[in-house]
Amino acid sequence: MILLSNIYSVKLLFEHISSPESMPNKTFEETINIVRADKLEDVDGLVKQHFKDVTYANAFGETTTIKLLMILDVFELVDNIEECLEFGEVYSHHIILDEEVCLERNYGN
Image (tube, rainbow, N blue to C red; front, side, top):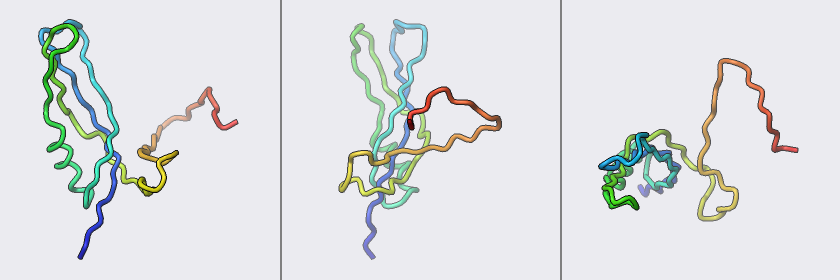
């Protein structure tokens, strides 16, 4: 049986840690990456294997380490990304609120 790889959009959270710290606040980075895996259960291991800690000297002469903190969400792409990149959906997340919310912007018209 031949398994075809699925394509997933994976939302990740990284922390940037500098030593010594030039700024008193913490720096986080949220990214969305494309991962090819045979099944959803493989994504976690593939992400952790690929995103090892990276350490470098930053512009302030400090040592900065970028560390993967967590996988925030995984979304299986339903579009064939090889066929159509323009306006292809790579991530979707539903926001469910307990209260009614009024949005001030309307991009539809």
